[in-house]
Image (cartoon, rainbow, N blue to C red; front, side, top):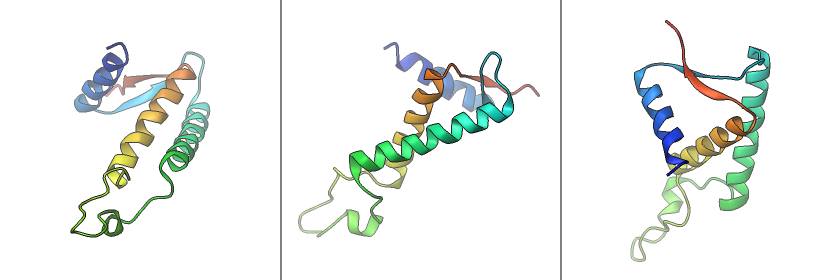
Length: 101
């Protein structure tokens, strides 16, 4: 439940407008660098866990045996990577805040 609350808060903020990562004492170049390193780490983690991305046409295999749902599609991989980036950025002390208009 504790992990669900920050995720729901981020989704609500995202639904209300633009959000950005901020950290006390951080500047925009640090944010971009940290987010880039978190994104690279997330891609590596997902690839290690599930292997390289598989084209959606081959993901479904032979129709008589059904879909291989153990292999995440591109949308699923994007969600997994996004969640990993979120955890990484929060571990570095960042928080998502709405962008002032």
